[in-house]
Image (tube, rainbow over all chains, first blue to last red; front, top):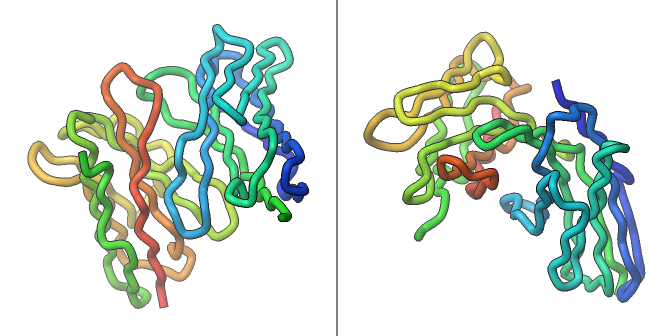
Length: 112
Length: 113
């Protein structure tokens, strides 16, 4: 089955700096890669996703890049703000209706 | 649209009791997924259901756990004879047919004492 690894497990940045979280996956058939943000005690919320036919996607301060050859994808958050502090999960999926394989999460702290 | 509704939000059970967790998908969503999140860990897939069908239960423990999504009513995740190791947050997600993305519910936090 698919194996998704996520690094780092914790990340602290100064407000205004950038944060980068990286994930690798093992199954070359995976073709959908969402990123979820989970605040303490709350539900995971989709913040951005990318399909395998695209190399990069951007939404305001958040961007995701995908390297299919190397089987890795990354989340980039620019101009970080304290409200970006949360746990971020990457995931991989093979097709619609299939389960998501989640990474173990990155706890991001933005220091004011 | 009320989103994915899970109840109860918190559930406390004594060892050996049964836990029933409910999930109502978003309107128009026909796919339901259950995930378990242990403290400070990621989300682990348990089961994928459509109405009256279990599509993939590869993540379900072989014993004590069962799930259903009847023609009418919410999806139910049932845990019989709970043990301390079942304490976790259980999240339900739903999606539309043919779509990749999920919407998660707020979760049920099960505590076994």
